[in-house]
Length: 140
Image (cartoon, rainbow, N blue to C red; front, side, top):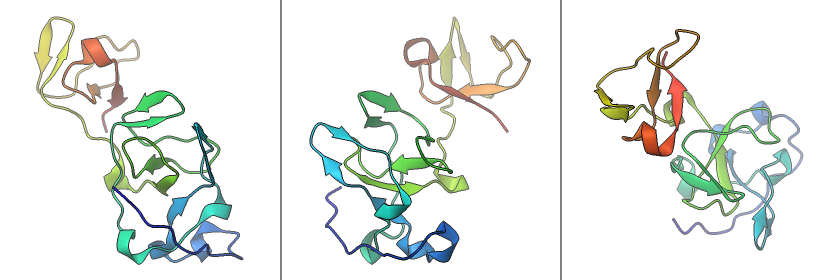
């Protein structure tokens, strides 16, 4: 997704003071490494007000399959496959979904499972092959 630059909204110290259409964010971009989003980087771009999280995304040489919480009060996601400074706070619909069916050990699962979880909580894989990717989340 190629996203144009936009003007910065200043004077907002609380995210709740900023209208939802202004909550897509951009950070100062430094070649080779990107810093986590901050409240100072709120931008208004009506053309991407409903920006969609891209999963998985690369951030600081790691791959992420769900919303993350780096130097922010709330979880956020990248709007690009490789984080380029464009991000937004995650809403309930943005969190990564379970991948069914998924392969775990020697079985294929079509629903959340307690297998392999020491506390007995149900979980699911975020990719079709848990054995390879080792990405998961607890089911609700």
